[in-house]
Image 1 (cartoon, rainbow, N blue to C red):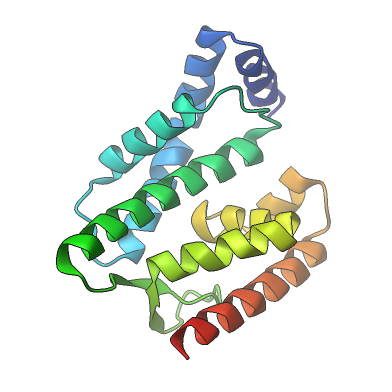
Image 2: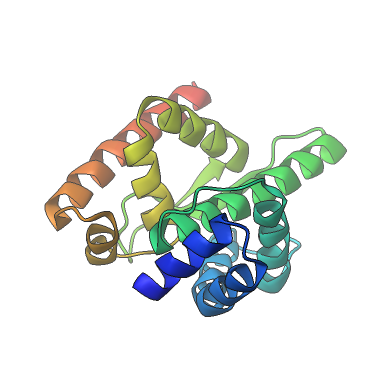
Length: 186
């Protein structure tokens, strides 16, 4: 873990070889996030996981001097870049079809056997952006848990908080997003 943090610090300082090494070391986790996000959309995405990773890395590399904090921050930003790529694709499809693009995502319950629900990806993105505006910590928990696919234990270790704090934060964020998405439907 500290090796990744050191590499991210060197990347932040402008070391391109540290950037390449950090991405190489985290590539398996980044690919796992991409596969997970694409599988949640049940074939409504025209990208492969590799293409999604490439698009998101281009977004991240295009940002000027990110203050990388640690592995969790990098994975959360990668997941966010992937989410934004998917949102942009949905917007482009929507503009072409003149209809809202609805994708199937796993519910915010976090349960493996839970029912699927229809959520408009653009509305989810809007709700997440609003959550980030009012509560950046809980928005990060959503990015790490829902998009990056980390467990409560992993998030607790990365954020240096208790697992019960992760669970409470996840419940609050999930409730907020559910309310926001229900309000969008109304």
